[in-house]
Image (cartoon, rainbow, N blue to C red):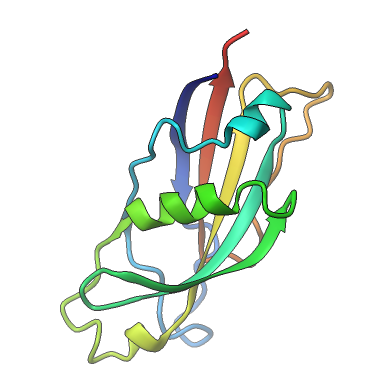
Length: 142
């Protein structure tokens, strides 16, 4: 049973110069459903990560979501999609005119258990090629 799931960290570590990437992922505000961590993952002490690729409309609607990478495959995909659907981006007023609505962004979702279920701790890390990441932690009751 889940004790709590929270966004542990939101960080833009992969900012690139404007000459490399025309559009940056806009600032975001995320709230996580406390039951988003899959119960099967909690029960089996499984951690993982998912990389989602998507576009953001001028109305702040997340569209055309694709799973780019998932480990373990399929276990956290639904939870990552559900969390992404709750993220609100601060899109600029000229978002559509700038062409950004046609640009694809990527967000890495990392699902960690606290305390770490392995000794030594081998926790999943965000994808290196993501624009940003969310770390979602959960604690199972014993």
